[in-house]
Length: 90
Picture 1 (cartoon, one colour):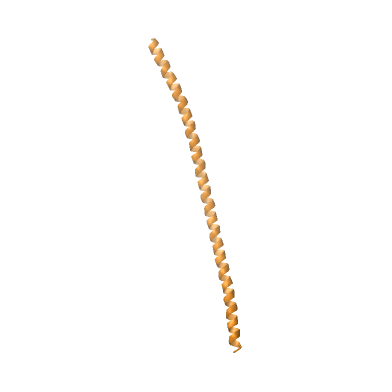
Picture 2: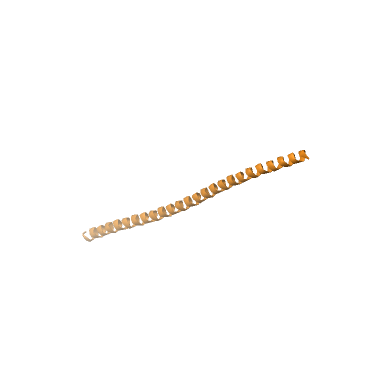
């Protein structure tokens, strides 16, 4: 009878310790999951920032290209007018 009581007590103690370990393990897993979620959110934010920066650079590039084209058109117009003026003064 004492052996059964001792065995039962040992089993209850082992179960209790296991339960403590599993709650600690569960807390550790939840903490790691929260960290992983935070890293994923940071990754998504980094992607959005990168995409916005790329779009801004593309727009700036398009604006620069348009300005260069307009500038060169103006230069070409001036040169053509100079050529016309020379032809008229032959």
